Length: 154
Image (cartoon, rainbow, N blue to C red):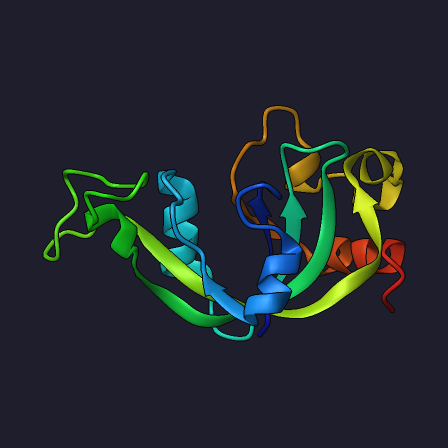
């Protein structure tokens, strides 16, 4: 059974266009335990992802991706030269995980956060909850389908 997720990236760090150019990437640098646990325990190959640009005006869903590799240790946590280095991470206790995703399709029209907030079908979507800052979060199939519809993808 396919699950649906939303993954946030800041466009100045790793934009949708870069994923399209690269074809696929590893989702490194997540340093929140709940998001880590989601990638480690819940995300499976074939799951579908809303690729969300955060920390921009307006924040928006830019495209759809797919999980292409299930959770594995985030090597950046053990790289002293990485901004994501964690001195407590080791090969025996990697602490942080990542998944790989691949680009599927760009939205025909970006779906902005204000537009999503105005859509009553999206009520209860975690992204729209006050204080929701997780970079990896679940999306119901109904919410996923509505966001795709809003983005011009049927």
